[in-house]
Length: 143
Image (cartoon, rainbow, N blue to C red; front, side, top):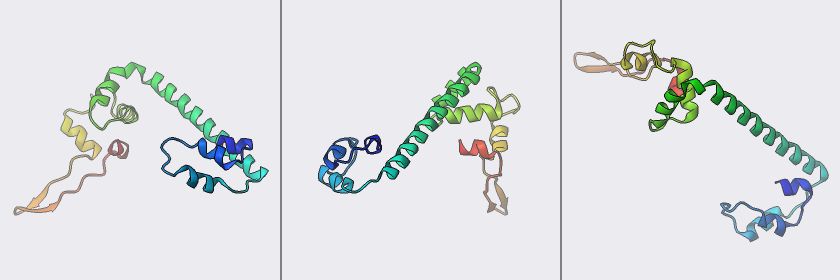
């Protein structure tokens, strides 16, 4: 994309720059890259690529700031990340919502209930009426 934005227009040269995981053959790539690209298109492409790069830098900067802020809770974050399916971002969200030690909750069951992660069990005469989960905390449910 950068080569296109800089003015490269030779389909063979552009096809050789394709990522190794691209499934198309060199011939297919050359055919797809053979076309007309005006200077206005190149300008728009360059602006879009610059904007993407700027957003990546901002995300990286925010990630570093979050890591600094959660530095004092490193042990809790590490324990959460050790659980299968919990990413670093999810661990940050969990600690932000319930605290590093979850002292507010008397038991794990109360925490699960507050988060809306355990289904209710309504029965009448042995017949299940409802097994829905409570609304709970939407942020924790997404983790």
